Image (cartoon, rainbow, N blue to C red; front, side, top):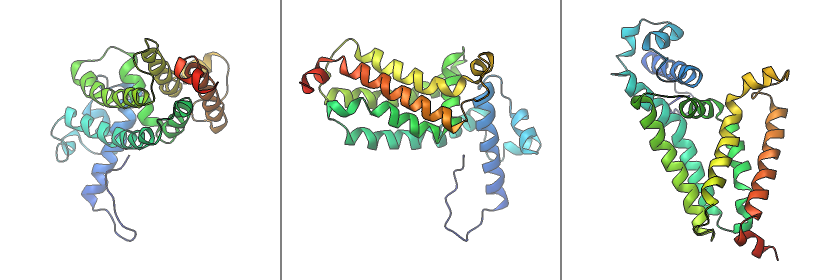
Length: 218
């Protein structure tokens, strides 16, 4: 997770490299342990610096967390916005969750961060920033469904919630794979491909249960 954009041949300064390392370390710890169980001392130890060194780049733990969320989620929001703006055909809606899952596979740490934040009780400092980002993502989903003619169908919220859970939850399920005796985990490309196929099948089945889709197929 890097927030520095440089042209080929340009090198980061020592301070920029340190800031990038802090963000990478914090993103991994927040995704694995959650906001509340991650301390700046943990982040500093992973980077290999003293805790006061972090304050040169981030005034507080909240500021570091907000930056991690922005770097991880803004690209997803931008991509989803572009994705949703291209798809208003009801027949195409069922394909969107699988495409979104493929995007999450490119950002698995962000997916785990979201899953961790939503799965366990969190302090307001941890929960509120994530909820704001989730609200933006869900608003995009609701908007495209509305433009596609789904209207006020009471199952619409269930469709969105289930697609969210089956996509995000995959990246935080390694312990379940272990209990099942599965030697692979969420990082395995073949398992991700199978999951994407599963998401696509489930999404199509859900989408086709809506009258809008059924009517367009007749």
